[in-house]
Length: 433
Image (cartoon, rainbow, N blue to C red):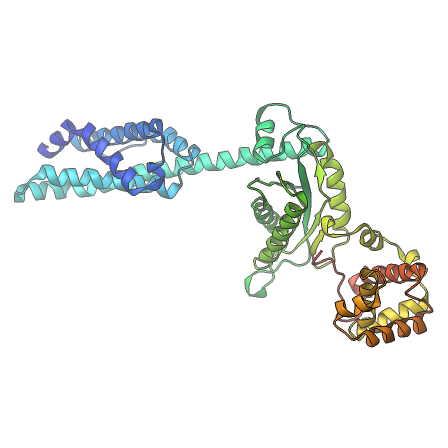
């Protein structure tokens, strides 16, 4: 009783000492503004007084005793204090209180024994209070996460409808993601879907079904949300069976930003493979302003159809109009290709594709054979021989623009064939687009 009464007399000083210890030991508390520190001091003071009341009355703490912790826990979560730091603050407060108990007990044996009788009830109080505070913190986080998902979903539907948010949570969410109405800022739209059998660690099949698919989609959605450039947050939402993401590119070189974002999206897809999540991803062209988002969404969905069945990334910023037209071509376009050209390309692909590479290099060198040979790192006579070989097999002279364009179109059409129609070892070229 003597120890407890002495503690009660100096409880305000103990609370100040506890907050000082938290600031010294926990960086998140050291960064708190004065108002939040004052709030923390008030909470510590209320805990100390409640703790002393329970001990003086020799009873067990109840939820009603510490009801004040719920709103305080929510305030800490809203302020960005992590749960680990919040619970660590309880530990620091308990340590300061126990040190005060030992100090008030004095040096006598009776004092030491009296202090030891307080150890167990103090631990019970701390465990009870910190558990309730942690539960309140987690409840608020879950509520905040649900609110954020709802706001993001509502914002996405508004943007896909071609409308601009004008006020309230939607407008705030738009600004947070760099999607400012009327700004004309550059952005990309990404669509992604799960493809193929999902695999887990150790290449064990993951159980299929709506729950597994939903879990994988939400994991992929969270990964896409972390992919951003220029410090902008990416809006990423699970929408039915697909994931839709809108990334603002921010100021500066939009081509470089788009290239950087495509690289990061490719890295995300590859990292998800390690978690057994296989994605097919389509990326739109760069558009300007949120009023063009519906158009960009249609582009992303259209190019998604070009991704192989086993997944990949099809990025329009990395595809030329020529390549895109070839990829979208139907069987009629392929049937129009001279069979001699088709046969040459098939045989050449099986042998390593040196003739195809020569055609591309000759076109890239503006019909300069010597420059093409240097590009291919071969002798000029070897390049000359290859051109004669191509002309003999196809009847096309690469120095004639019409013939060269026909060969390039045939190559692009051959590259765009579905995987099932290709020779062993060939690729569609989309996985790295």
